[in-house]
Length: 451
Image (tube, rainbow, N blue to C red; front, side, top):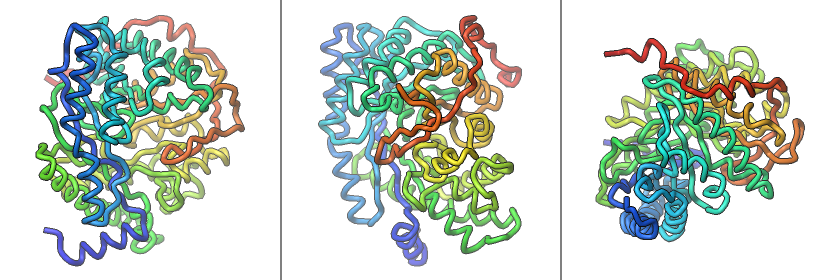
């Protein structure tokens, strides 16, 4: 049970330290919606989502009022559409139905316009990847993901190439808004099936009929705790302080998850422990790292500081909930973290350093704006590099790049809201064209043979 002291601490964290529940995400299976007729499939998808999630937003708002805890987003994730649309061959009809259903239910985003192609592509997978530019430029709330690699299967380099090309086409299709469509596509290695965060959420094939997953936040809470309890202290004390704070944050997430599950009559899935930043001052993962003694995020020592943070968050959170999942750790999206934005603008943070940081953080190269003339092969090669880190280390990694048309290094793109703003970061001018053109599959590493 949560005692009076914890309640008072939680109130302070909400009012003064920007604690929030970043998302309540309802996962919905769409297997029953498969149909050889695309029109019938679309109707089934719309009906299934709107019926299952009709009270999701209302319930989230009621919980906000009753507990005084901000719930920033209410979202839906669905079965990867390449599986659902295989029978009819028209994934775009599913995208339209998903967008209409998201609008009707009032959710912020709906994820699952996805394909799992780590070992190879079916015809349905290929059609979905080819349709990404149109799907993401003609819908408002649909988010997409493609899993191109896993520790068990290796890296599907043909899919990597197609994803690099898709990112460029999405950027061109949404050039009037600085390639904003690219914010709704994540390319994964080792994607998890219960991730509540967008744009990469989907309701995995191993999930049940429906569930509630909650993603917590709270970088500001962690930073304030370090200021109060571990100023100038050894790293052992820093880690203990973060663990205790993560425990408190996760207890709040567990409470909201259980309440939402009970009221909606849907099984509770997981709490994702991730520290998800925002562009607001006082809500930055980069500022936590700087509180540990770094002059600016990106300088020497940043990767070690992030490793400590990520590990301590997991250790603290796992004690607070019996069902921890999703990505669980620390996110480092450049455009969505005021500290990352400032570090990149100062020239302290580069893609190469971010890539090193992804070896120890929760996800990968996230919300990074690059010059609009960056070739598709370079984007694909960056995806391959990040996938290799995930494959070898047995962890989830991801890439969400935004090649902003007409923009060059030194410029900035402004997206607003939680998406924030991003300075255009440089990429290597040297070509990976011949490397990407080889295609095929990079074999799974030796550590995949665990049987």
